Image (cartoon, rainbow, N blue to C red; front, side):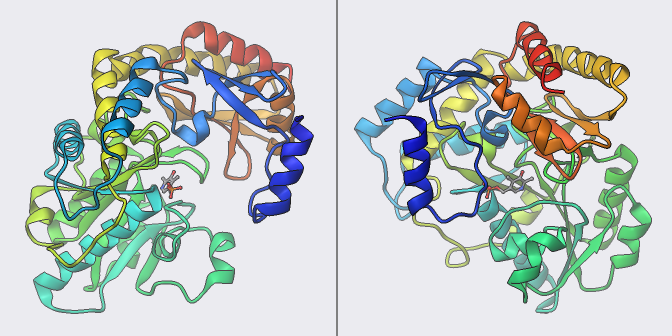
Length: 395
Ligand SMILES: *Cc1c(COP(=O)(O)O)cnc(C)c1O
């Protein structure tokens, strides 16, 4: 069977909602992936900021295998060991109060929205609350998450969406103030916008939003699905700002490839929002998913992944800045830690990404004009040098 055959069969049967790259991936080792034809790819995409630990991590894989042999699923009607362990570790890393496990990022956003609305409902009994979201944000594809995603292109065909959502400009505090009303119950944003083009929040902006939230008892929801779990050089990106969210969402690297997300509440929100009967999930946080989360936290600690990101990220920044210096069509770099974007001007980003793939390098795009680099968090300086070589060959 060659790759052409697998691609044809997939296209025959899988709903065509992705223009996939013509590659059939088969296995992974460290920061390299291999396709069915044996071609190797240096992976600076990590399955969209998911596979933080690198591929073929024996300890991680063994923990998953052990859990499979023990117990895969229970439903949430019962307690299980990995649930207790995973929740404790996520609460400890975030220094927040309570966690609800979901199956994906978009479901974590749904839960965060429900928790915020319930909090406001318990406070004033009204059912006309509003949420302020940001332009160029991305929070997921289910109707609630799509409703707070500031991208008309993703929304248009699916209207009417969830009501009560207003949009402000990211990093523009005045525009947030303009959208405030007495009905506002929450402000939602990514701490570092990912899909929109790798825009970190300005410290002044985030602090300003937090101040508004505190003054008016509005909940701050920070979406850490892409920028969290060590990627920016701290457990969660907001921890670098000294601004705590009331609700945080988490997914992507949380399970390192096992589908799991979470929304995490601070004590104030946990004490006065969702109660039994308000929210649920059949799979969410099952023993298999929680065993993955639990092991991810253990390995992050053992391998000091967050410290490693702090150490290696400046080298990546330096190398990317050198490229921006060298090539006229590279207009700049934005990002934090191992979440970096290189801005391309006057050339299609898609063509560079495709060429890189041909040259054995996986990079992603973001927004209209950004090459996005979100590698496994275990990359070394040598991997970065190799990435630069393959990327330059693709220009
Ligand atoms: C990927 C992403 C989501 C959606 O997560 P899914 O697991 O794809 O549903 C939400 N928010 C942000 C910031 C993301 O990057």
